[in-house]
Image 1 (cartoon, rainbow, N blue to C red):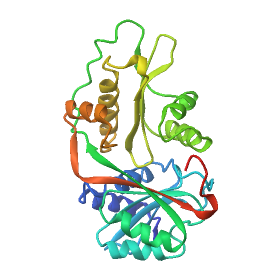
Image 2: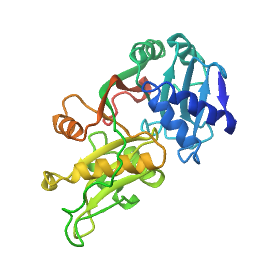
Image 3: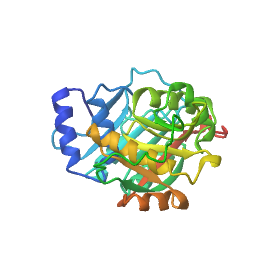
Image 4: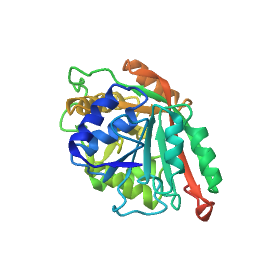
Amino acid sequence: MLVLNCSTKLLILEKMLKSCFPESLKVYGAVMNINRGNPFQKEVVLDSWPDFKAVITRRQREAETDNLDHYTNAYAVFYKDVRAYRQLLEECDVFNWDQVFQIQGLQSELYDVSKAVANSKQLNVKLTSFKAVHFSPVSTLPDTSFLKGPSPRLTYLSVADADLLNRTWSRGGNEQCLRYIANLISCFPSVCVRDEKGNPVSWSITDQFATMCHGYTLPENRRKGYSRLVALTLARKLQSRGFPSQGNVLDDNTASISLLKSLHAEFLPCRFHRLILTPATFSGLPHL
């Protein structure tokens, strides 16, 4: 195992990962954030350098952690040889097996290999699989002509909005998610539409892997074009900063899939896999 701390080598790694799209997108997004101030306190672990066969991004060991916070305790994985990834899994100090955490990636063997090692350590593994999406370059500003007068208005989220996002996110509704969302809003780009009272009615945020997520419009404000406006605006904002504009969508989320198709988003050949790993100590907790 090698922890890559050299800023020059991290920039070289970023370029190397870009040549491995789309499978490397999650790790690439995390490395981009590391190279731009590292607001989420991440670090990079590899099997070797420069001819690596597996690379993992994880929370810095010295960063404050909550053992129940699988949102923040998140690893992104990319490998050229799955055997190298398994070797890193089996090393004692790459993953923190005593906490609830998640592993993300865009490669098909990720689940089976991770599950095999996790089961040997008596951890439960929950898999959720998504369609992976990439937005084409948004060259022009989205049309906002239908936003008449002073409200509704297109703006961005604030930490004060985190409670609303926590309550409306299918993965949320708990203390860990509330704190995680507040941190995402503080660290990364977001877009929202606010009503005449200044309350968010439609929004999307960016996560620690530079992925667009939690795109949501309150039910009473749907079919007004807000979701389209928010998605295009956030995609353009990310692209203007040099980031890929990527997202994930569940197979049964037909409304979002229809929206993405209307935006001419590219559905990638690989799928996005999110694994939540729970030690027996914490099994049975309601939000895991």
